[in-house]
Image 1: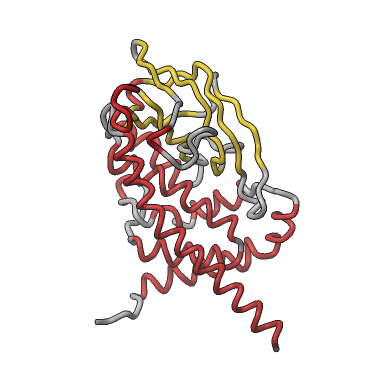
Image 2: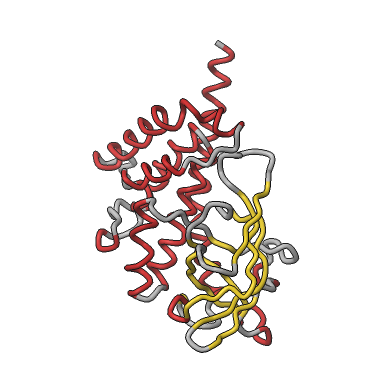
Length: 264
């Protein structure tokens, strides 16, 4: 079995390494200390095609595949782990829309996510449910040609800065986890408030809470069918795990390099 990378993958890896070292690295420590969100870097990563590896060209991607995504993520995380988070926040929603969204949703939302023009996020975790997706309490009630959302999501990466979000909410409480549905929403609409939260690290990756109070989402923004949200959520989380692992590898490389440099 040949484990050598193709010339195309080597080029992607080198591009990511060069960008990370020259564009991200010089201000990484300062950005983290000052909790600075670098929208300019998020946009540049989109321009370079970093978010488009697992998205076909028809929706703005380059179709290089998951291995390219992992290689790029590793190089970004090696220099600044906070910037690695944006790989998941852009790719995760885009890939979910690609798999389950209507053609209209795909055409409207995937290209700006992949280009880095729209900062994305996915809202799952809740104050009283944590990572227990089936126990979420946020509701979505059908009202004519829209759904009205009420509830709160917490510890959401990009919550303070996101332009759009993949939101999971309960549409039928009686069906338990089979009563959860998925939506894609514009966060610049009335009915949503944000609160920034702090954590122990990766301070340049904004973290926060989203609160929905009679937040209206067009019915056509439903992803898949009502009741398919739990299935979609589990699928989506599985797609993000490779990028998380690649990011951990990048941080491990950086730690090893720092230790070797110190020892010598």
